[in-house]
Length: 108
Image (cartoon, rainbow, N blue to C red):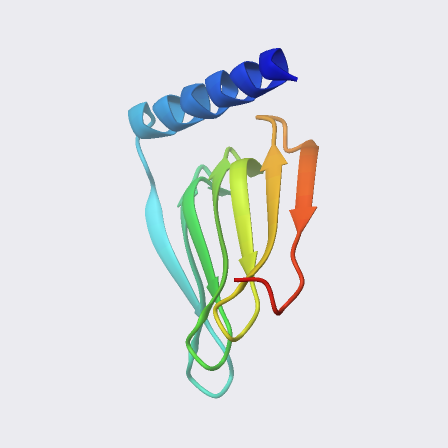
């Protein structure tokens, strides 16, 4: 188990270093039809690349994570509308999910 934790931490650090060294493209915003912001992300060569944030209509954060060339990478966090953590999901560079932890809405 200890080796798996070291491997996972090493992988995540390398993902963040890769992202920080890669130039980010055009920032894009999407809105609900009622005008509230729905999500923000960057596009590079037509793919989502870099920081991604998604929001509930209430304005609370719903999802946060990072894309690399269109694939989810690293740790993604999902939230309930009351700001409590709903899930954490880990992704490899190719977008493959490697681990998922879910939390009850009453978790604090």
